[in-house]
Amino acid sequence: MLRTRWTVLADLVLLAALGLPATAGSAPDTRLSARVQAALEHAPRGLQLVWVFFEDKPQTEPETPLGSRALVRRALRGSFSASQRFEDRPVSSGYVAAVARLGRVRHVSRWFNAASAELGADELRTLAAQSFVERIDLVGRYRRSAEPVQALVPESTSSGSRPESGVALDYGTSLNQLEQMQVPAVHAMGLDGTGVIVALFDAGFDNLAHEAFATTQILARHDFVNNDDDVGDGTDRGEGSHGTATLSVIGGFKEGQLVGPAYRATYLLAKTEDTFSETPVEEDNWAAAAEWAEAQGADVISSSLGYLDYDAPFTSLTWADMNGQKAISTLAAEKAAERGVLVVVSAGNAGFNSEHNTLGAPADGVHVLTVGAVDPFGRRTSFSSVGPSADLRIKPDVAAQGQFVKAAGSSLVNAYANVDGTSFSCPLTAGVVALLLQAHPTYTVEQVLALMRSTASQAAAPDNLLGWGIVNAAAALQARTP
Image 1: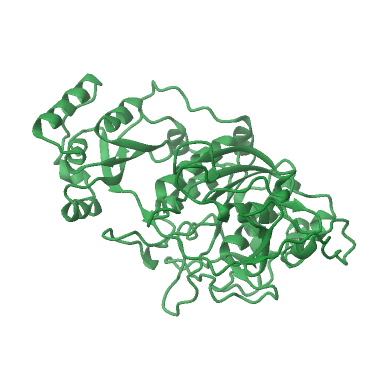
Image 2 (image 1 turned 120 degrees about the vertical axis):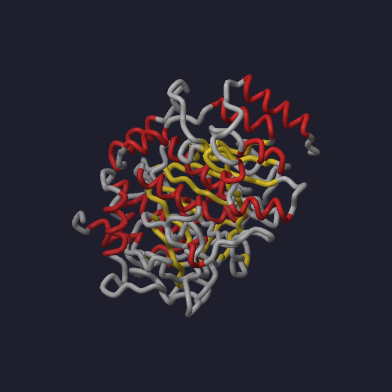
């Protein structure tokens, strides 16, 4: 949009009409981050996707409603502070309206007191001159590491192999990925995820008619890429075979074929990744999904998305930024954890580097359970990302099968696939977390993290390849409360 001094003047008149101050106490450009200024120099006429952070929140805005499940979870597992109460209050509608008058608002974040929006250079400078604006920064634009090749398994009507451990369920060829974590033994205790709400953040879910989802309970769904409630392919942006696979790995149920660890949990489906663009996801989608899922009552977030590189010409995050304090997705994961949500994420598929970590945000989070990948024999896969975090914390935390994982296919209602990637070790682990919370709903985030680590296969000698080792669901369930 071409801007002139007259249209900018009109915007200032509008701000006055909204009761908002038209000038700031300091130079406007000091509110534009160095990254924004560099982007404007590179593309002075283009639109920029930015976060507009606000100075305050008025007391007059109506409270944002939280679901009853969210309130219960917070009471059971959350930590409360004055800053958290401020974060829960709604953003000023007047501030958001002022931004919307200048460009397209994408998401509004209570937790960060900010709005993400697409704005041109003149609009950015207009906003930077307002005293209600604290600062303006670029929205992170991330690329996801490519998954290893996925091979379709021919359709099968066989009943699969009956487990030898005496478990009544017929796991078919999904037995190994669960037995490696001792999940069948936990199922035999009567635990299946009942009563636990799990939110999945992914690229969409294109085949919910698959037979593995016949009994799957879906509480709500939202597409944060296209701003609607259709998380399938539909006619808008994004392709959802990846989400179909991750949902089936954690919550699918078709005896003789595929059983997920938390097959009776309740699910929230969030489409956060635009697979049609060169920037498959932007961090405001992830942050918005985290706020939505928390308010809906999610107990667990499972996110098979790991991000590091911005698209050119923007400055990329680097391994040195994986310190738990830089990426917005990491900060949003931490805010969810403060409210009692267990956040489980993939470590990434960038493999080993002898000089530094290969993690992607939010896998660097302090209160994030980061999952690496092993093969069916328990050996680390070559693609699994490694730590430590930039501040020298052990990462990943634990590991699960991420190679030759049985999953629902996206083409037919009875097709299955073998898939590779930390994208699939993540939901397997998140399913175990759901089982643990079903058995012990009052366990805090810190207690669950400690149990998952202390009962894993190499708890006595953790490293930055597989963390504390392969998850052991039975041991975690039976361990004394930390």
